[in-house]
Image (cartoon, rainbow, N blue to C red; front, side):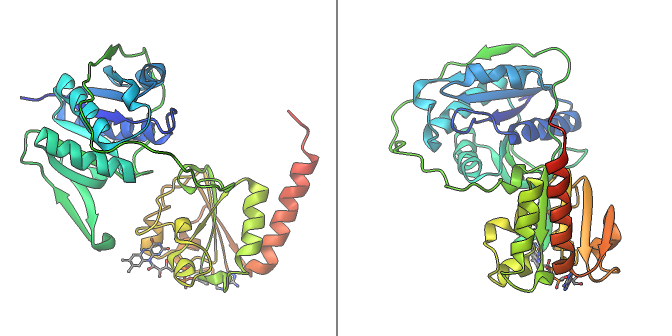
Length: 326
Ligand SMILES: Cc1cc2nc3c(=O)[nH]c(=O)nc-3n(C[C@H](O)[C@H](O)[C@H](O)COP(=O)(O)OP(=O)(O)OC[C@H]3O[C@@H](n4cnc5c(N)ncnc54)[C@H](O)[C@@H]3O)c2cc1C
């Protein structure tokens, strides 16, 4: 009987992303629920060099699958590498991120392991069942695995990041045969953007229908730049064509968990809250003091955004200008 929870960490461009630590956070919840040991596997061309960081964050053992063929991500070779690690770990559950690559990998891995599969998991219950949304989140399903082995992908920003704690876990290399592939890595073309990534941002400034137009986002971007924050948006602002979808926060957008979330002209419907309610300090700026976001905010500022934002931005710039360098 398989007995182990395996978190699979796949570095991006040779480096770990903070979401790797969220996988470990989810793995710990599942390991506690099923009373099974938590293991991690790091897969990549330089996996051994990254294993130490993972080993310090609560797993009982870290498996390393390193091979030149794993330098760049291809679904086939990474799925085989993850399957080798799952066999070594004797894993009953394998956890991957709900990224495009993570989901593609999960599907192949589930086939290789003859495992059940649940993607976009947002909650792990005390009995090991998991919850995930269907139909844009209008239905939340509870999933119970009947198969001895199951693969799950967990949604970003829904589980706490595992912090370094206690002694480092032992690290063990896993041998891996890359075999023949029908696909090959050709090139990586990163998005050319100087914007801060919403998913990993510590500060987010988000705008909604209250901004009234695409022009209304200009003072919002100014505030975000002054704060060093990423820009988010409500679905109504996105649907109105004022800002691209990649900025949408909520049930059908990104989930964020920044230390500071500033919501401007956003009423706070449940579908928006689903993407940001776990933020640290929530500041709402809105002309309606009774709307849901103003009610739940740590700081609620009543007023007209076009008057308030330039004042706040100017004040932040002034304070930063006068700050004594550390
Ligand atoms: C299946 C489904 C999925 C969805 N997914 C998402 C999602 O992922 N994300 C999301 O955001 N929504 C989502 N929605 C939509 C959601 O229900 C709301 O319609 C949406 O969040 C409302 O956006 P809003 O707060 O910007 O607009 P509104 O609800 O219209 O609120 C606008 C706010 O601006 C304030 N305001 C107006 N003028 C000013 C001003 N001059 N200065 C300051 N404040 C002002 C108003 O008082 C009001 O509170 C989803 C809905 C469904 C059915």
